[in-house]
Length: 140
Image: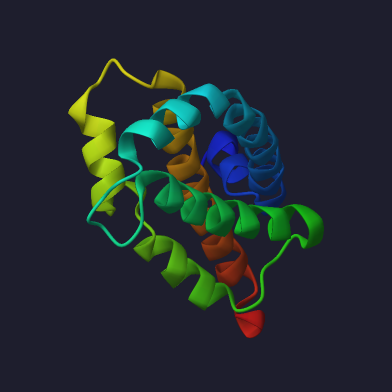
C-alpha cells in the first residue's frame, strides 16, 4: 500500500475535504440564483409530486445537512442508516432532475455543475462514513 493510498483513507483528510466542498457548494448555490429564478418560471407546473426546484431543495438540505454534521461534530448518529439514506439518494435517479439535466446540455450550466458537485459530496460522505464505521465498528 502506497503512502498516497494511506492518506486518501485518512478520515481527517476526507473530513477536511467534505468541509471545503460544503463551503464551495454554499457559494455555488448562491451563484445559481438567476438560473433558479428562470427555472422556476419554466418548470413551475408539473405533474410530478415535487417540482424540479423542490427536488433540488430536498437534496440540498439532506446532503448538506449530513455534511454540516460532519463539519461540526466529525460524525453522524447512526452511520449505517445515514449510509443507506445517502446511497438511496441518487441525484440523477430523480426523474425531474434527470430530465432537466439531460434535456438541454448547454443550458443552466451553473445549476448543472452544482448538481454534479452535490452528488460528489454525497458520495464523499458515504465514503467517509464507511471509513469511520470500519475503523470504529463498536460505534456503528
